[in-house]
View 1: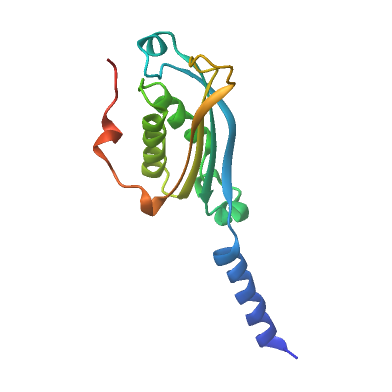
View 2 (view 1 turned 90 degrees about the vertical axis):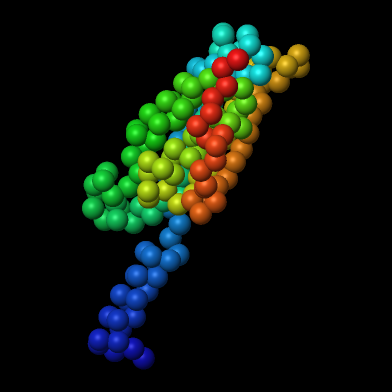
Length: 156
């Protein structure tokens, strides 16, 4: 039987394990709608289309859970602004847009440990009855390396 100080030490240790090791937390953004000019065909970059972005950001929010202070978490309003700014830069491929978004999130939000991104183009002009087409990417911060393509946009 644990008594006195030993019991308290065990409780503090268990609390530390639960808060520091076992808790996995996410900040999510569901169905962020954007209008942007991405596509391989010139008409797509001229006229534009509707896009949907879904994000799942793995981040340690333990401190914010205790403090109730937005400075101790990832501010999802700032994340939305960053995504909208990247979406406003025309590109041919959604893969390229997604890469820019991922790199920017890791660059601007140091609390983000991993990102799951789903980017879809609504009603893509491909001659088929398809509601949406897109890309899904999961990336850990350790996998995020700057690439020359990250700063290149295509505006033919």
